[in-house]
Length: 432
Image (cartoon, rainbow, N blue to C red; front, side, top):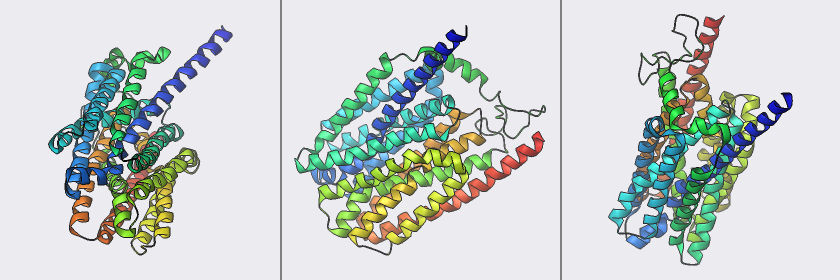
């Protein structure tokens, strides 16, 4: 019996690792999907003869679709299961990138942009929630997913830079379409043993029936750390809403700032430093390269020093970096600051997601979807504003705008951590 249990546990861990690795592959694909637009934005603008504002509209349409995808994720997983929802998402991403490959008229490019956004948004929300649940909220597991997201965001600018030099930049879209299609096939055909049940429609219906009814209670059903489906907004009790709202606003500003910075970084460098197009596109790889390096250690560091302390150090460091960007225009200094910004931003998204879910237990799928959705709103709005600034004013104002967003991020993070500390003290007092 003991030997059987050991073999069963080994197989179980093997299936968990297999699911984690296909989750990493999925995040690799959506990392590419997030950044490919910014990598070829200059070429698209030249090809179609449109403005930066129009390019910002294309990026905005993708992130509006992203928002819809993450908001639909809990409903779809309840109806067709987690695996079915991921298959739908990867299918939409494959089809939309294939449509981009045809370089259709600009109106059609704008029309397919939300479809692509739904695909990678839904994938990010569902896979992230599955891994957080499966790995019991360990920051290191989420950090691994985010590392592969960063690898995807790292390799595509290098690839695009090469394609630009070869005058075949448009091949970036069919490459992504092929990778999304391969991931779709793997999700369709792979088995994860006993975990298959957790990804099925039956498991989704059971979870939906129980949602909001589990947790730690003091007996009167009003424990602050227990979701209460019958009261509050979206199933969250009134005591949880201030923290949820602050977390959502933090994600909105963070993702909006990061997407604005990464999508317009090549254009900023071309305008500010007279850098060539291929070299400017490769600068994105420097940013995402340091993001990947940081994410290799972010989860381990955060688990050791605490999530709140990690987030505060990261955002304060990012503020210093962007403050220096506003006062220096030297190319070598900009390169160093771009690298540092990647290190400081590397773990913010994943660690903040784990931190928020830790204070809102029993609602992982819904909380993850809401926070990622607000990130999508920021990713839709702020690149549009940034594109407008690039068209109307000089690049220095754009960099100042990005620095101001980091200031807002720091203020929101401080309020969020303060509210989280109050919640923990209140919960500890009730349990005592």
